[in-house]
Length: 595
Image 1 (cartoon, rainbow, N blue to C red):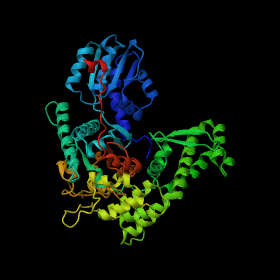
Image 2 (image 1 turned 90 degrees about the horizontal axis):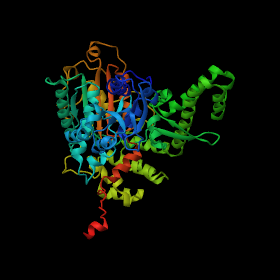
Image 3 (image 1 turned 60 degrees about the vertical axis):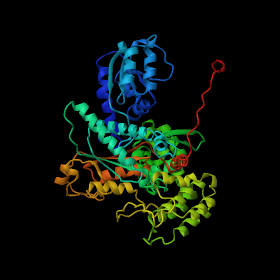
Image 4 (image 1 turned 180 degrees about the vertical axis):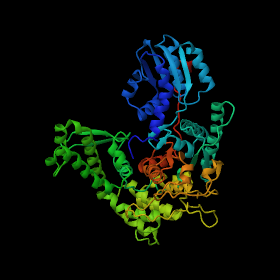
């Protein structure tokens, strides 16, 4: 897929910003200052560059919460979240001595009446424009969005949480802005669960969507569009985010310390470099969903092709250090070659980790997750599969992951067995890594014959060839394919609100093989499937959206969550679920106490 896909979320978001904020800017030829808060800074960074803003007449970008020099001759654009903190900062810019000539205010979402009145009261005469533009989500990739709210996990699943309802309300508001940006009023379905969070969120989104389109349309409710929104909880598939994944992107984010999409590496001469892994890197887009074995084959070939086109004699026995010399001699090829160097290093780092320890884990993990080995033989004694992992010198986190897969495979184990496993991994004081999965509705202790068993999702049969250490398919991919083929069980996935007939009819198209266009495709042309996972989304699940859309080009598949998780970050989050909130203390002034 191209780096800048026509259907991409980033392009849609940037276009909406141009159609609202930038269009208003063009009405005045005066250059303006753009003021952003933390969230809108990330939002703008995700979909445009400074050069894009400069070409639209915005000369300076400032942080709302930092000390700024007054520029009274210039107009300021405030693109901010409708929070007490942001509105207070805006008011302070004009309360005493105005910092700017005028303010153009754009809120990401609905602004509360009390905040609006406060703003109007203190700086109303300086405000030329005030709009709510419904952009309260981050377009992370062309088919992936987040709500930029990792704290939502503990708020929803934490034992001592007191703001679960408020968090679900906020997530619902953000999902509604996604639908509004895409101009969709989707049919909504949710996965039934004992916790009921998916059902609650589906109800909230349905209510808020109805309200949104009533306001937008003034009188008539917007009809349901050719779209479906599915809402599911993280506990629906606990195995996927725990397994070691061997596709390039998921593997890299699991094994290499990549933070904020920045990969740091050392060159052959010992100097440190950084690379941003995003969709501006066309090679990254091409390779990210490939198996690492394929990537290892691809990278050297691509490097040699680029270098050979300019200097065939240098293409033989090309090394990273040789590549560095080649870059100095060929300025026109520097960007392309730099990308190759980055991915040569990243692939080498991934393969080193794989060969050192991960390879030994993968077979056991796959056998436990699938309940069968590579030859299709059923795993009769999961403990025999787990024991070699526990006895080998793997990291504590890797052992915890294997133990969890063992527990998931049995739908829970006995308290006695669990106690032995915790002692074996030596996490007696950190058993929350395992025990707290129950807060996600995942059985940790066997329910027993008297209890109602937790039903596991039924799996699709897959005939396509796979690598023996990558046999597992994320359950969400089964769901995507089932909904596109109209096979999704309505008992497990009830409708909160039904979509158009096209989503409920016959004439299913397989999402697992290439097909010729037919009348059914034409009928569903331009439709969208939006999936939201409560509690975090993994990189392998993100990959599924691209794979399914590639197979069924007549439907755009978009997936999102409150945040993106890696196996390590998810385990760390799970551990904190039972921790009580930090106590707050009020520091009293001695004079006030004396009074």
